[in-house]
Each structure stands twice: as structure tokens, then as C-alpha cells.
Image (tube, rainbow, N blue to C red; front, side, top):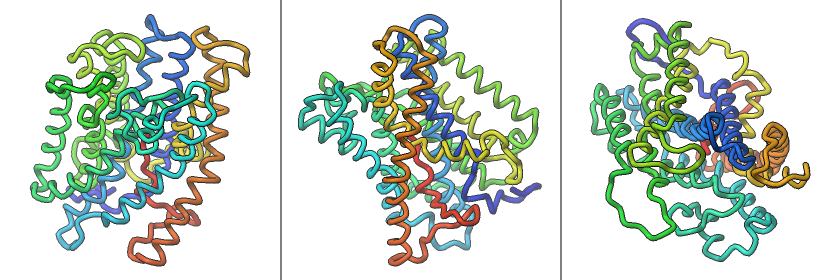
Length: 401
């Protein structure tokens, strides 16, 4: 980053602290589901544990930031003839990043997990195509968390269209326009929709656009002149303020203002409060990492351990409910009978172990195959390398379950 009135150029393609934050978000999703499955869904503790589901907002914001920053940079460079990352490369990287490991997980879980036994053809097709939030009663045991990935895929598909529309917006109006659309999505619960029984429109993409928009705003600021958001992120007092915003927003989200404890959905107003506070939590957690000076060390989130766990975070997300189901018979207990600390630790151990295998045998080989293919057929789209010796595809690294 630069100082003064210049734009923030030359930002790093790979941000270790962002990878570490992704690992924390994945573990946050695990905490929510473990708390529910061990019966910790009531009272103050239940509210606090249950609202760890706002980790999904962090994932969406990370995707919004990483996938939008190329478009934000192109909009501010009059010398560039291209207007952002090539769509073909973008779509291929999305498919290869998501689908190979996801399809393996769906096949294994629907075939072997007792909770998903005897799944119908409709359940199979809906889950394999990530359309389960639109098909009645197809969210099934071991795969219920995939609703958010279904939403995420819609954002991926919509992003090139949003980029095309954004080209018509003057640069100085891009941030207000994105912020306005994000705030408008908070009203989704009041849109009169008539759906089949078993379909919940509150799980559809428009309801959560503000979470994705939080990252898009950060991408715009990264390539904008130094302003208040940058100063907050680059000063200790500002980072403390952002942390305070995240904590306060989280506590509001965990209160009755945002709905009942656990995974139940409240009134329209409560749902709007939850999504709005999720936007604030995600923005306040991601902003200090991406708007800070590039040379700022992040000793915890940027450590080798956290970066490695972040690399495995997608696998943890898609496998953790299966890992959780394995834990109960291992320790000789049943769901909703307590023992949350033990169940949580074992779920994380089992989950990360499966995730490491998934990354080594499925995710990494698939991405390497795409990289080789891109190198042969589209040399101009060859990804940057950073740090030395490691090939980084910015778009492929931005998955947010």
C-alpha cells in the first residue's frame, strides 16, 4: 500500500493472514454444529455458540474481496484494455476449486453415512448440482451445511454480470452503489414469495448479498486513495475499534433481537438484524487484514500452521458433519447428551485429517491439472507465484464455504 493521496496499488496476490482467517471461520462453523448436536442450543451459552454460524458471513466476505478486487483494479486503470479477469479462466477456476472435492464428499456421504441412507434420486441430483436450497426436502444428513455453498455458487455466477453492470458506474459511485445494494438485501425477508412446502426463501442468495458485498467494498477500498478505512486498519487504535465493532455486532446477533437461540429462524425483522450484524462482523474482521500495510506481520493468522489449516478449510467445511457423526460412536455417547469440549476437539481432529487427505488427493491435483492446462492453452492467464516456489491462483484460493 502507499501513503498520501495515491491509490493502493501493488497489493499482494497471496495474503497469509486471510488464509488463517479462513481456517478460523471454518472452525467457527464446526463450533456451531457441535454445540447444536451436543444439546448446547439454549440459554446464554447456546446463543453465543449458535451464533458462530456468522462464520459463513466471513467466508462470503472473503470471497467477495478476493474475487472482486481484479474488477476494482481494472476500473481504476484507464490504461487497461481488459476490464477484469477473463471470464473463462474465472469460471474454470471456480469449478475446479469447488466441484471435485464436493462431488467426492456427496457420493461418499450419501453412500455410507447412516443419516443419509436410502437417499432418493432427487436428493442425489439436488446435492450433486448444488441446487438443494431450491428443491424441497433435499438437505440431508451430513450435507445440510451445503446450503451456504449453494448460495456461494450463485454469487460466483452472478459476479461477472455484476462486474459488467459496474462498468457503467463512475468510480466515485462504486462504493455507495455496492453499499446500497448490500443494505437493500436486508429487506429480502419482506419480499412476498410463494414457494413449495419444504423450501425456505430465506436461504436464497439475495438474503445474504450484504455479506458478499462487505468483501466487495473492501476490494474497492484496496484500490482507492488512502482514506478513513485504511487509516483505521493501519493504526492500533483503529484495529481495536474494528474489533470492538465485531464484538458488539456479534453480541447483538446472539441476542433475542436477532432471533431465537440455536438454528431456528425468527421473525422477518430478527432475520434482517442477523444478516445486518453478520455484515458488520465480517467487514470488521476482514478489513484490518486487507487494508493494512502489506509488510505488517500477522504472527498468528499468518503463521505456517494457520495458513496450512486455511488451505484445508474447504475440506473441513464439506466433511465436518460426517466427522461429527463419527465422533459419537467413538466416545460411546449419543447426540444431544452433552460433552461438547470432547466432541468439538475430536470433530476438529477427524475433520482436519479428512480435509488434509481431500486436499492432497483431490483438491490440489485438480488445481494443478487446471494450471497445466491453462499454461498450455492460455499462457496469458498463468497465475502469479507468491511466495517463491508456490503457485498461487488468486481466484482458486478464494473459496468460501
